[in-house]
Length: 448
Image 1: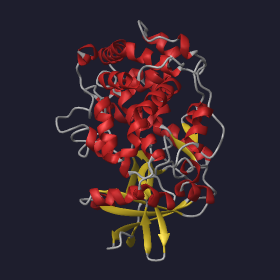
Image 2: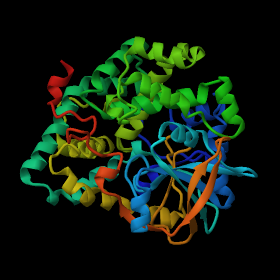
Image 3: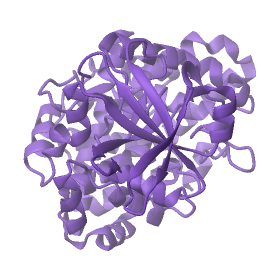
Image 4: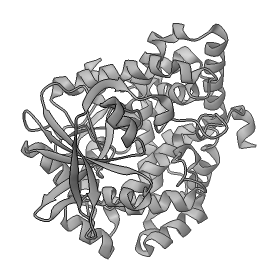
């Protein structure tokens, strides 16, 4: 169990790599070297202000936006939530300056776009330097699968059959392109434009690819941008979060209302147009990078390390075979398909609190009071509400005309090792009651 959680964390300051399938044209070490040393902003992977602060062992200042300040005051409690940080209170970093607390550019963006919220400021005093290991939600598949198998008895026979059937339907419908991904990862390239269009066509059938697509493009933009805005942020030790926000909101209508990456699927010409609008100089390389990086990433987050990527096929696979060869991918599918079961609001805590307990146990063992999103350390950081060995102070804060935050009211709040209710999380359902972004239609029909 500990090893599975360790595999789902990345330390960008270390040269150590995790085991992966054989047969790949490029290794994780090859990609680490390329991203770190051969991109304009690669140095920020290991030298960013956020991870430097964690490793220094100094007090950590974070901000959290909320629409429920009155309810928080009344209850005196703060809970964790699910999402990319699994089981943490989602925050952005703050840097103390003589005139106030300066938000990371992610925090500035949140303050600009969430004007209906109030802001909390935290000072977390860790008991020791915090390991700069970030959790990568793309690598949680084996944990999702094990959680499902352990708690499968919570489902009715009909629900379980529906879940397994839907997963296999999606896999079989997407199998030709999934095999194309592995072919590219093992050195048999598809033309870039053709690859992007096939990817875009497959995402509605196979929503997990939308998450991979978005994270790969975010990585490309953050590491390759040379705009004046990006350079200004890099001088502060920060990656430019506005780049991928612009990408997401331009690519998907309504993304600003509900951030749902299962709908992220721009075709090749649209991808070039979006990239040109964000930063024209990045247009020529975006399709090739996406094809190479996404293919490699898919192979490493989908397959068991015991597999040879060149010999795996998704055609005619059954559930038990997939559990052995591609447990990580099967788990990601189950996790997302579970969310459209009608009883999911009742089942939510049974499945997600189980993962939260494991995450907290891992972070507590590793000495991590403030886990961060390790897909790329762009500033998404949280508070481990179950951490027993750090002191914390919480204030309600106001923002001044210079954009700095100022604590104005200390709050008597307790961090609790419990997940917030589903309705208050990023996994909430939409106005119709359906799980966000996951259509109930059968996979075979969605690519016709």
